[in-house]
Figure 1 (cartoon, each protein chain N blue to C red):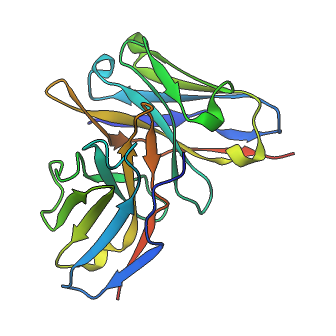
Figure 2 (cartoon, chains in turn cyan, blue):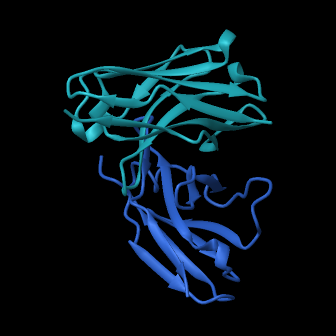
Amino acid sequence: QVQLVESGGGLVKPGGSLRLSCAASGFTFSDYYMSWIRQAPGKGLEWVSYIESSSSYTNYADSMKGRFTISRDNAKQSLYLQMNSLRAEDTAVYYCARVYLINDSLMHAFDIWGQGTMVTVSS
Amino acid sequence: QSALTQPASVSGSPGQSITISCTGTRSDVGGYNYVSWYQQHPGKAPRLMIYAVNNRPSGVSDRFSGSKSGNTASLTISGLQAEDEADYYCTSYTYSDTWLFGGGTKLTVL
């Protein structure tokens, strides 16, 4: 079935780095834009970044620009998020999500979500 | 960019209808017909309930409907059921090719 599975979360010190992965299955990964979305403990959802299907374009939320890098490997059906210069406020569950596509038209919504991976930034 | 504005909480009795609002600006909600709504139960991943303002993905009950007027979008749930109790989030695509989420609304079914 269509599935996204995140990994790579953990405890990291402020200023440290972490690389998250998201393994996709059950659909043609290379057809879809993908995104990362996060949720701090007890807080709401916050969009982080997206990447176009062939990696030709990416974009980030302002607070992540210059610190986070999104990438993908279509051959491995995988999405990544490299996070550098981590801060306490980056502590959150990080979800990867598929951007909804209907008949090659982007619906600018997120139709498939992983279960998330927890990132804790603390000394 | 500031988050979209949603009420912190709404409540209703089984069988009733409730509406959750989501207010943005001309640069997001008002400028694009790309508002979507998500349901999130505790400890679970969000689930897409409405996309492109008023469209339901396959498998979502027709008790859920969406609309938009100007800079404000709305999610209406009719015939409230106990399992509808959850957090609901709106999001909109924006002029800067990003997405903005609302702060979330906790729905309590009395």
